[in-house]
Length: 206
DNA sequence: AACTCGGGGCA
DNA sequence: TGCCCAGAGTT
Image 1 (cartoon, rainbow, N blue to C red):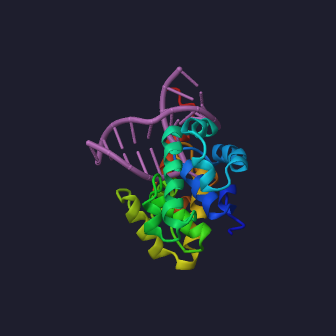
Image 2: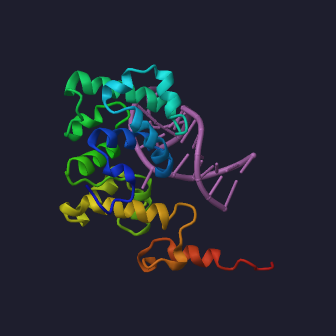
Image 3: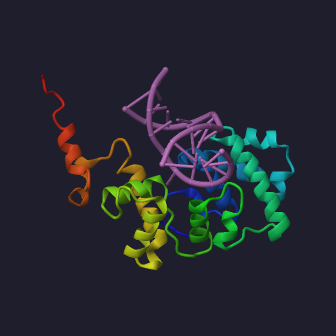
């Protein structure tokens, strides 16, 4: 769907994408990819996830953080898909957020990457980068950041923009160790220059 | 707004 | 070892 998406899970079908994004909360994409690689071999449809005991599903995703909550949510989610949507993932954002474990960010990722609806998915990376680059105020909530980004970027580029910002935040403008010394956006940054000055003198014998 | 869940990755 | 991480739900 998005050939330059930074993460394998964005190339999955709507159902697998939903499961993968739900699993990705509070852990890195590399970890999720390792688990889903084998998980999607064993579980193909919603029926497959509820056909096994909860303990077995927990064990299958045990390497992911928060795995107990996530396993429980996945089984409830699959049951809801079967009961209400004929086993398919609904395409409406509002219906998606009614699913257990699916919040605003996950729903935005699903509608934009699986169904082609432009959306700005704001996670911690997008929030941090947006605030550093003055695309939003430091005290803005996640929702406020999302609105400001949508205002600044053309609608048809919302989806690819959140991919770019996530990639930039994950691999370059990191939370704890941003690579300010080689950053081309240093002049637009709220904290970059001050940070470089503060971390520069590494051998001041005081 | 603050708290909790939780194993993996990284310094 | 300690600390943080592609969030969501509850209080």
